[in-house]
Image (tube, rainbow, N blue to C red):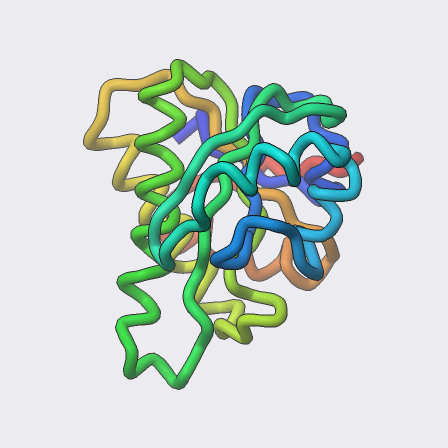
Length: 178
């Protein structure tokens, strides 16, 4: 799939139509990528997020990008890992599907994903990357869209794990760095 790529970068610096925020349920900022996106986007993002009444795990909502190079932010709430016995894999897969549905509905042509649930939510990175790449490749093959998807790794280890997941699904991992 030539419309899926991988890069090591800071997601807040990417000039794409939308970046995905691995948000908490309040959508009002937190740690990790969520905090970085809120800081980079500015206080207007927090004001808009407060009007959205939060978001349930496995779902997503869209806002403007404000001070980011990205025009939009799609916020999704990934599952906290409890050993895989609370539908965590299905909820994580839903995060990716819901973000892609919102992207298509809003005529977004490029979207960048972080590793949802892999930080404070403790989802095993190998499992999460396999779910992410699998869901995105399935969605793109089942839907008529020209959507370009970028998986963004913040560090070398995550980039290597994502690259292995790409190989599992027969996708050439065009590793870019910024």
